[in-house]
Length: 323
Image 1 (cartoon, helix red, strand yellow):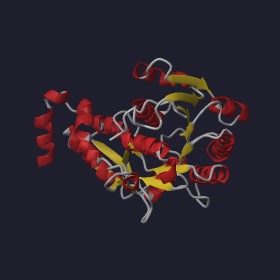
Image 2 (cartoon, rainbow, N blue to C red):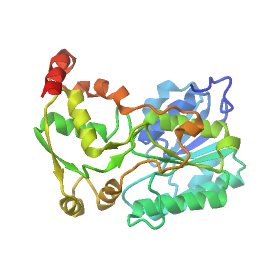
Image 3 (cartoon, rainbow, N blue to C red):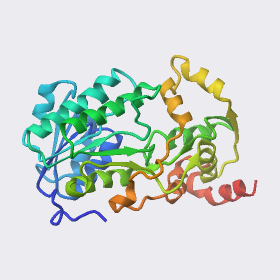
Image 4 (cartoon, helix red, strand yellow):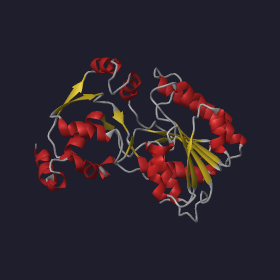
C-alpha cells in the first residue's frame, strides 16, 4: 500500500521527473501526487500532462519544457529539486545521446545540487555488448548515472502493460478486426509488468534511498508468457475465435528491416531475445511490492473490443472457450 501524504517522506518535497509526460510518467506522477509530493514534469512536450492537473492540489504540479541533451535545460529543471526521476526512453533518434549520455548529465547535476535520491529507468536487456542500439544506449545510461551518482536506484522493467498501453491495445484492435493474424516471435518469453507496480517501485525507491540506493532491480510480473500465449489470452478475453500463424524468424527479420513497418530491427531483435527477469536479480518482491498478473485486468480491458461490448460478452466468451 502506498504511504499516506502525511507519513511519506516525499510529502511537500519537490520531485523533478524527466520524461514525466510519457506513458509510464503518467502512472509515476499519480503515485507521487498521492504521497503529497510536489512535481515538476520536465519534457519536450509538457502539454501532454495536462490531464494530470485535476489530480493535483494548487501548486503541486509544474509543467516545464526541457531538452535533456542540453545542460542548461537540465540545470533549470533541477533547480530546488529534492528528488529526481529519469524516465526518458525512445526507439529512434540519437539513442546514445538521449539514453546514454544525457542521463549522466542529469546525474551530475543532481549530485551537484545535493538531491536526496535519484531513480533512473532503464530496461531489461540493457547490455553494452548488445547488437541493438537501444540496449547499448540503456546500458551506457546506467553506467553514466552510477558514475556521477553511485547511490542512484536503477529500475529495469519488462514490457509495461496498462489499460491505455500501446501493447495490449495494438493486438486487441488487430484481433478484433482480423480472423487470421501473424504472430512474430511466437515463442519469445515476456514477463509483462503492470504500470502501477512500476510506478510504485519508483515511489518506494525515492522514499527509502538508504535501502534501495545503489541497487538495480529488474521489474517483471508474476508469470512468463510467450507472444503466442498473449495473443490467445487477448482473443479469449474478447470472446473471439481466431487463428494465429507463427511467423518464421527469417521472415520476421525481413519484415522489421522494411521501411514504414510498425516494428524496427531493434524491436524485433529485443523481442526475439525475450524479456524476462534474470535469475538471481533483485525485483519487485525485494521492494515489498506484490506484482499483479495480466489476468487480473484483461477481461475488463478487452470489453471494448468484444462483439456487442458488455451485452454480448458472456455468450461470446463461452463460445470461444468451447471452440
